[in-house]
Length: 327
Image (cartoon, rainbow, N blue to C red; front, side):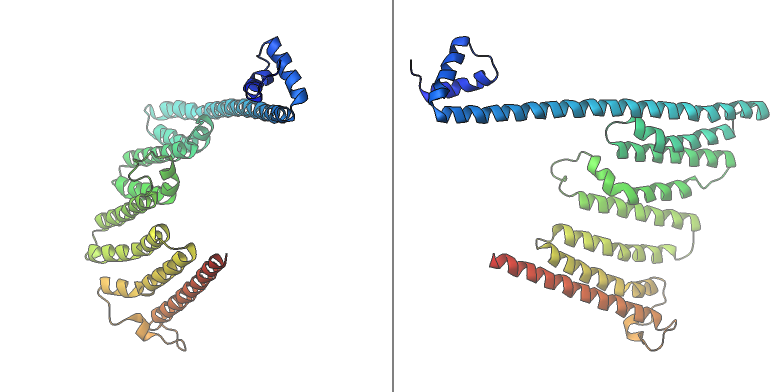
């Protein structure tokens, strides 16, 4: 009995998986002896089945290896934690024996917590290692500074903690933002969120220094100088991230913006501290470098280098654009 190719082709997956009946198997084998089209399709399906089987086996091997590595990391982490307990117990006994009270023992405890945050935590955590490590390190560092402040009778806790935490935020915010789940409306604006957080961190450091120093005229000078300096990274981020032009043209504009802002930074500083007596560029004299001409000379150097880089990136952008038009 002759069967239509469409029926045979519907049965081929069952034939490859060896789940069809014996009669169907015989029919298929008789048909492919006479039909080259179905025979070719059977060969292709067989190759796909082998590929799928290899893929499943590869995933199984990888998962087995990952489980083995996780188990080994957990074991090493637990052993490290146990080793850290030895000096902690010794310090506890010595502290009680000598002083009959716990004082510097807590300093040792929090110090070991800091060490454990960068050694034990990465070994025990399977997912988001960087996030958990940085968070645990920050918390343990704050605990250490707080413990030292309490037992030294100092009043400098906020002066130490805020700059330390702000510094960690400035360094690691671009990495941490990747692990934080954000709403759909803002998930595409991680650059703005990162810059906002880091700007707040910078201002927090400036605020702490001002509160602690109580220097007259501090705020009038610190706020405008800090704000102007932050315009440089903000300008670069906004141009590179949001300007709807090619990469080379964005780099060109970023170089121009940053060079212009950096050229006049000394003028802003002089104005903020009440020592402004003319634009620095007007005082430049490359034949005579001194305290009067240095700022202007450096400003012209920054401006010229920035303009050169601006032109280079702009030319490269035009070359790329012309090549695309030719294609």
